[in-house]
Image 1 (cartoon, rainbow, N blue to C red):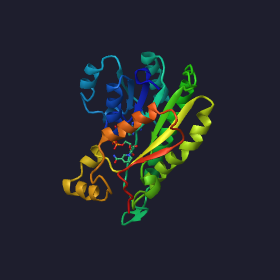
Image 2: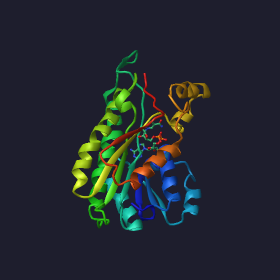
Image 3: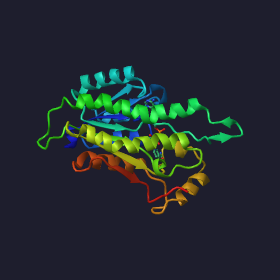
Amino acid sequence: MELDQVKAIITGGASGLGYATAQKFLENGASVAIFDLKKSAPEGIFSELESKFEGRLIFVDVDVTDTYSVEKGLKLAIERFETINVLVNCAGIAIARKTTSKDGAHPLELYKKVIDVNLVGTFNMVRLTAIIMERNSKSTTGERGCIINTASVAAFDGQKGQAAYAASKGGVAASTLPLARDMASSGIRVNAIAPGLFLTPMLAGLPKEAQSELANQVVFPKRLGQPYEFAQLALFIVQSEYMNGETVRIDGAIRLP
Ligand SMILES: NC(=O)c1ccc[n+]([C@@H]2O[C@H](COP(=O)([O-])OP(=O)(O)OC[C@H]3O[C@@H](n4cnc5c(N)ncnc54)[C@H](O)[C@@H]3O)[C@@H](O)[C@H]2O)c1
């Protein structure tokens, strides 16, 4: 897909990996609709991008778990960009809670919340955006769209306290192939990225010693991933038509203990 033809929705784009992806896509000529919760977007976060990439960026207050909110967001994005041909799902939440602890059993509502945002929210975006992509005219090679979901290395080696998170990300990874199969006849590719440890606001809040302890577990290079490296991979997937049905780890070879 030619990048100046890309009309992308990026969920979770107000922060971390999603924000870096929005920035990278805009720098490469794409138009971007960021879907995120307004309450999480720091005041003025988009003003620099908006003035630099005039007319190619919109922010829409969307909760990915709420169908009405997603449909409203999609309508606004189509009004602005006429169509959508790329979806990058970065919206997500992380919790750390053991199945049993001194506080008792893992609250079921907390478990359901993580599944709801990370897995159900991802599928909600996929199904509602794919229906729109199906209306796109085919490229010369038959392509109508490209979807990238965000899993995690926790899908494969989840740690203590990650039963809910790992289950949600395992679900995202496991969905990649059936989604790609479902969408194949429509010319829509579906891949997922499984990041290792990335320096986003989530990890940046940890003390420096804790950060370097985590970085030490990476095989090479011995550091946390930078959000732009995730964005580069997302861009590569959009441009690489033969990439389909795959969950790609980007993790400096880390295998969490
Ligand atoms: N940072 C890492 O090391 C890492 C590693 C593996 C996987 N991931 C995954 O990558 C994705 C992005 O993570 P990040 O580190 O950039 O996190 P982040 O917290 O910086 O950004 C996540 C964004 O998702 C948004 N969001 C949360 N719930 C939402 C909802 N219901 N509707 C719309 N938006 C919602 C938040 O407002 C936030 O802007 C997440 O799915 C996360 O699980 C991150």
